[in-house]
Length: 314
Image (cartoon, rainbow, N blue to C red; front, side, top):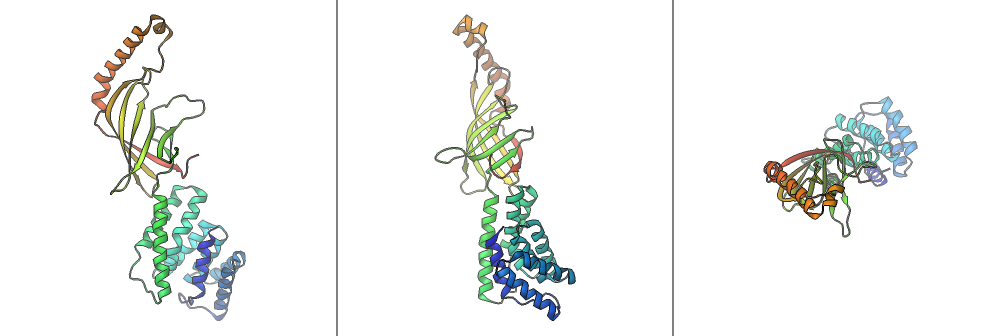
C-alpha cells in the first residue's frame, strides 16, 4: 500500500471543493465524509462510501478521484488506476489524477513485475513532467505540482535502470546486477540447472554509465561456443540501450581484438602423445579462427535485443 501517496491525496482533497459536477446536498455530505475517512486512513470505510457515490453519479470526476485514492490505500493498484484514469477523462483540466497515477502504476509494477504496468508508470510520469499552463489558483498548488514533477522524474529514473532479468532471442536468461564489491554493474548469462556451458553465447562483462549520453557501455570477453574447446575468443566492446520504458534492452557487441581459441581439455590420446600434439591442436584451431571467424566478426557490430522478464536479479 502506498501510504505516502494516499496521505497526500487525502490532504489535498480536503482543501478542494467538489466542482466537477452538479451534486445534491446529500452527495456532497457523503463526499465530505469520505474525505474524512481518507484523512484518517480509514480506507475500507472510504471505499464503501465512494463506491455508492460513483454508482449514483458515474460522471462525477471528483468522486472517482477520491475512490481511486481509497482503493490505492487498500493496495488495489489496478482498480485505483482505473478510477483515476476515468476521473481524468471526465475532467481533463483537473491535474490531481495525473500527478497521482505514476506512483499508483509504479506500485502496481512492483507487485506484478508486468511490463505493461512498467510502461504505464513510465508514460504517466512523462505526462506529469510535461504538464504546463494549468489552472493553478494558489501557491500550495504550485508547490504540489513542482513536487509531483520531481517525483515523476524519480519514477522515470527508477524505470530506466537496466538492473533485472532479461530473455534473449535464443531463450536464455541474462541477469544485470551488482555482482561485485565494490559494486559494478555486470551482465552475465544464467545457465539452466545442470548446464556446464552456454548454449549460444556467454556474456560476462562490466557495464559503465555513459557520460553525456543515454545508455550504458562496457567491455569484456564474449566466448562463442564452438566445437574445438571454447572456440574463437575475442575482446568485445558493448553499447546498451534501454527503450520502451525499460522493457527492451538492445546490446550492440563489437569484437575489437582476437584472443585465440581456449582449449578446455585435450583428449587422452593427445595427452599421451605429449605437449607437441596439444600445440598442434591449438594451432589447427587458431588457423580455423583466423581464416573463417575473424574476418566475419572483428569490427562488425552484432545486435542482440532482449526482453525484460523481471525487475531484479534472482
